[in-house]
Image 1 (cartoon, helix red, strand yellow):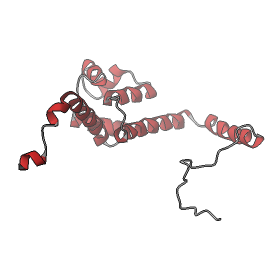
Image 2 (image 1 turned 90 degrees about the vertical axis):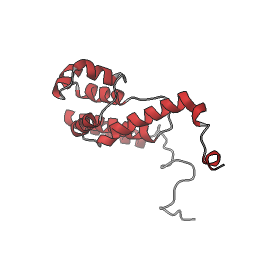
Image 3 (image 1 turned 45 degrees about the vertical axis):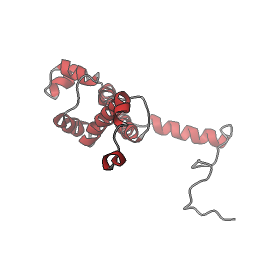
Image 4 (image 1 turned 60 degrees about the horizontal axis):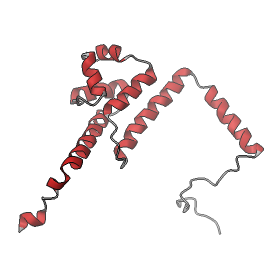
Length: 158
């Protein structure tokens, strides 16, 4: 039976299992490793920055219970780019102690800062705001669940 190429795999895999012990696999692996080694430092850094951006988007869409702060992602960007926090704080014209508080989750990201971060790191400013909003909603729901259970349209209409 011919398989329709437009159908999703039923076993959850996008490819067939590969025998990693074959010479063919070792040749393929060598090609990939050579490609990785031939990337320039700038290309490697660009890939790492994209990875952080995708992690941010994945976090928004995930049901992970552990909070990941916008500051965690900012810290990751600065680490990847080897930019000291103090230098970054001065560049974006905020007090270094305020940047530290932001990274540690003690201060929220405001809309202006979200625009600045979006511009610097080439991502949508709403990404920063949405991560912060997701975390706030999670915190509130966790601490006040019982209170929110008191509200329903059914009770309101009674």
